[in-house]
Image (cartoon, rainbow, N blue to C red; front, side, top):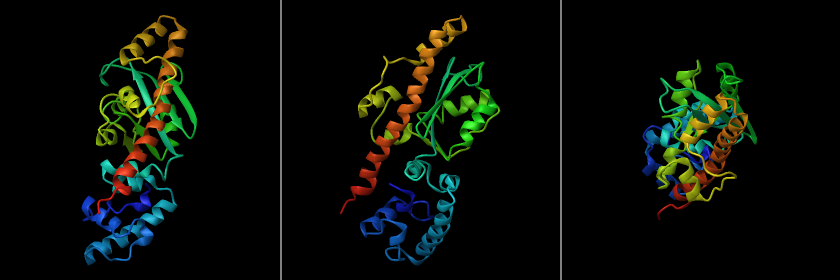
Length: 248
């Protein structure tokens, strides 16, 4: 599903009205002719389409992040696929105020980068990675990854954000990332590690075990890479359930 299929950002257009338009054959901005809605709503839709076309041509993902309801931001992905940054962090614990970020992995447009505390994990390197992205995607990142980064570093993650935890729940895919991956058939190259293992590996590295860091980085990178596979799967399922499977 693409942004151009959407009317829900328009004030006064909810899920019911949008689906009514789709059922009437108005499945793209190009199809809208003012019919099937009231005059005021039609004027708002026309105004939105005019502004949105211009914003889309200029690649203004932030505009759509602000205008789409948070639960519908998954619709931005198809338009900004190549400039979506998938990221995941590892930490020494669960508190952004008292614990530290150890590694951060970013996956964008087929490339994966990992930043490591005490080496290249800095506010500047984080800002550089986020500066390349039009859209970011995480799993539970709104409550975990983003608060950690903003607390530990002088950085603001203000890029439009798809937190996969919520669209997964919409599809009855519940639990942590590894469980959800298993439910949709995503396989991992290495045995599963837990957050507790990640803490242990970091402390082993601090005591001089470089192999422990290699394992931690590999685990962290796989999390970030698998987020893309998961988002591809989730947006495909939502497209089919929301857009293709319209009730008569």
